[in-house]
Image 1 (cartoon, rainbow, N blue to C red):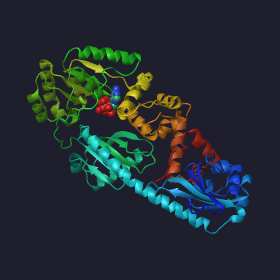
Image 2 (cartoon, rainbow, N blue to C red; image 1 turned 90 degrees about the vertical axis):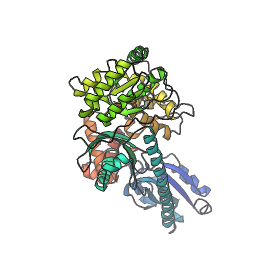
Image 3 (cartoon, rainbow, N blue to C red; image 1 turned 45 degrees about the vertical axis):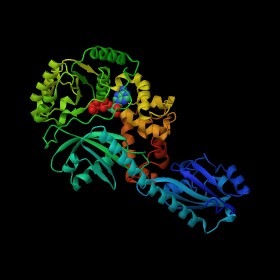
Image 4 (tube, protein in one colour; image 1 turned 135 degrees about the vertical axis):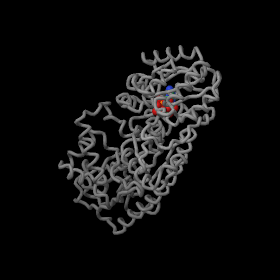
Length: 524
Ligand SMILES: Nc1ncnc2c1ncn2[C@@H]1O[C@H](COP(=O)(O)OP(=O)(O)OP(=O)(O)O)[C@@H](O)[C@H]1O
């Protein structure tokens, strides 16, 4: 388009979704000089709240093509100009992703400007549609990765695609699919990761860990890993030792971090690795129990990855099978021992007794150490245990942990560093999902920074806590929720959202900035 309009008395502007001009093409020298004087150039923001009525900001507000001529502009510097701007609407998410605008001097206004802008926008929207095919490929790749990591119950889902492992396909009908899609759309609207319960149409309860695939601006797609809950008991898939993942880089043999908690953990791990015998690793979900189990196995000389089994899938006969294979050299990791089903408690206890007797390198993990829990009786059979503290209790280790996670994420290139503002924002977070959550945030950030150092703007929106690293008060959180809801219900239209909230538009803009919502997209 820029080539076609090279000799025309117009210039083409491209603005981002926050109305910042990011590119300016074509235009004769006299026009460009005037545009420079009026600051109509890359880097300048033309959001309506800063620049009043103009072709970029108003088209963004109205979500439709908008024509402004001469004194219709609020800013006097723009009075000699005329323009037509139109929003680019993502064909899948329906979010405005930018604005195309053609600007000229008032005397050069031409009836063709509007059709030209609209045709450019159509071209861009078609390309965005083609890109969504790429996000399907990403989804498939992530699904395969999840399966390779040994997860037996995995679903990959986007608006148009559902892929599921046989364990889940057997459970899921079309109502379940719709319900799962609703669940994803709700929980991953503002977060990249979510874990919580979900009930299938026939009453089977599962716990789902869902993680968004791709960028937050990509069409929504997610990987869900399902674990059955103990009751009501679903027809359980038979537990199998997950095939060990192919040998990758050797796990680090030291615990990352310099906090007192990290030193204590290191000392305990050193003690434990001095003798080969069953170990129980306790800690909140995502804290790195399985990771530590692999480190310990490695230090015991198991340089090939050791197979693992999820205790929530154990049946008495599966435990008997494991027991038959047990010897002083049989190594395995039993994950989530505190979720062993009631009917497998007794046999698992016997299995662990035998493992202790034989000195077998069996490592179990558990998220709960509640003393009166039936499953606690199983845990006590392991005798030796180590507890990994949650990330929020060793937040000073975040830099070292982030380095380790980023090195694992980008094994083939220099490890990116966290820039101070990004580091401050991450330190301020509560990390309920522990290292799993941190790994996911860093993976998104590393993709956004293209593998270079991670700045505040590379973090997912929810983790850029107000730049200064301030945590929201509960009142601010309530306010934020109300604003997000209003913007969602208004499909991102700020005038409508302000009307719904009963506040002036300028107040809404101020709140949006103060609550760190400027880079969010809203609506279906
Ligand atoms: N020290 C570490 N270095 C690099 N990656 C780590 C480290 N600790 C944990 N991770 C990564 O963090 C994620 C969560 O770790 P892991 O699966 O070991 O947690 P967990 O405590 O076993 O979780 P759950 O109880 O929910 O199964 C994994 O992707 C793991 O590879």
